[in-house]
Image 1 (cartoon, rainbow, N blue to C red):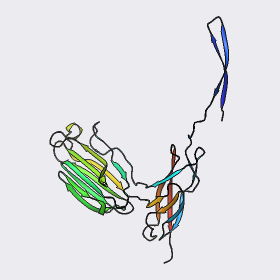
Image 2 (image 1 turned 90 degrees about the horizontal axis):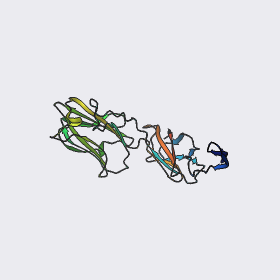
Image 3 (image 1 turned 180 degrees about the vertical axis):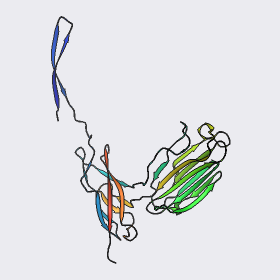
Image 4 (image 1 turned 120 degrees about the vertical axis):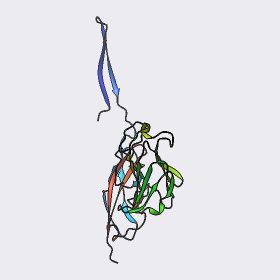
Length: 262
């Protein structure tokens, strides 16, 4: 808009003064603009094949743009995991999102449970696939309970006595990606040994690529991970990101699957 400003500054001792003309030059900050999408937010693709289309974007500061795509998780974090207690020591995160790749092992370890925790595994439509009560510790292999387009793990901790403790870890390919814990089993309870009873903890973990989509990071070519079936699912949603290495922008997209006469 403007590359320089001029002014006159004056300094005075009360009796005498002197003036000087000054110029302030404005320097351009390199790469301060985020990419702008030039492709639309709605795509159409035939069933029984993997091609969708191409995501495009421009950037006034850079010629190098990389693309990525991820899922639209169905929920949000409300920071109310410990639903009856409020204490500075508690991690209140109650919603987690992770997107394991095909073939990666996924396990949930719950430990130091007092009184007991109910773990429920649900598919993408909310139908219960597996449920178990854990009295102290248990490791669950949850890979077989996950659907291709997203599943959830719901955890609820119940306490019948004075004080409670809990801990859990979610691991993907043997690496812990999310965890939470409070209290020291048989020594001190959560939230400064509060005596809350009933349902005291609730959290949800969302797993899986709901979008069933992948994108070439350089060309922006968008494809299905597995060929869709119109009769099974006719619409997919996801979020694409365009980045120039310093700045990024996102766009929610919808892919409508069209029926092919078979």
